[in-house]
Length: 346
Image 1 (tube, rainbow, N blue to C red):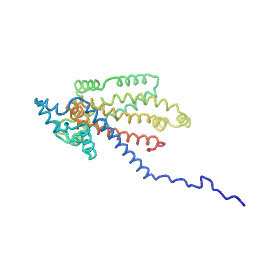
Image 2: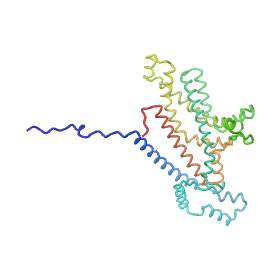
Image 3: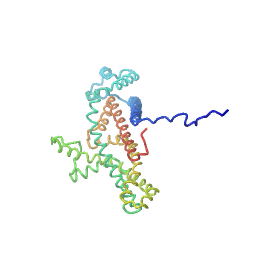
Image 4: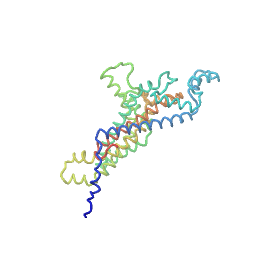
């Protein structure tokens, strides 16, 4: 009697079907939304308790300005702001408001926190975008030039310039740019976001905002330009030594194609990674730059809220800044996939 036929193991169980592109995109979107919620919750918890460790509160600031710091007046202010309740109760109410997408009320400004932030977010995003674009473009151009002139005079000058901007404090650079381009040459405005008394509209208003944006964006972007220049130089030199670049040259590929399609595209990957890592530091640097140039953004508002002990406003700004950093990293991930199709978002 012949033995029964046994099918091969790999033929017994059919291979599972790969999920469709739509399902994979939906899973990735849900996973990232859950990550965003977890990050926002962690930021809210840490910031809430850290700010409560700082001495003073809004009641003390208001009482000091009013010149009536009696115990009764202070107790009334704390009861009005809810500061007389236990810390755990205040935290629970804060989380409950966050669950309802309510950032609270700024008693110091007399406005809802969400409304205050909505007024300042466009200015901060414009400043961040201008600084990042300037730093990335200038860093790529200077780093590429330094790599192709490695060991020569141009490489030495670019490296020295990058080191100078890397080591110089932002506030000093901003002040020197104001002295040179605003005071001596009178080319650009000293501060602000637009000329209030001019009343520009349409294209004239856009050009006026662009003129006011130049100095703060360049000030904020010079430090990161120095970092990207050095990073791009090292990446370009490393990629040029790879076998696939030598093969392209041996096959007779034209120099521009070798530069843009092979060397530059692969050398951009470390720079894009650094952009995502430094998104949070760009937000932090905006605080100083907005203060120096009187730029009406979230950084200046946070600086004012800190000195006024406006904790509700400060918590809202920190939370929104964290959300901006997360969104920037998502954009960086998408750009990374575009530059290297072998990488897929998971």
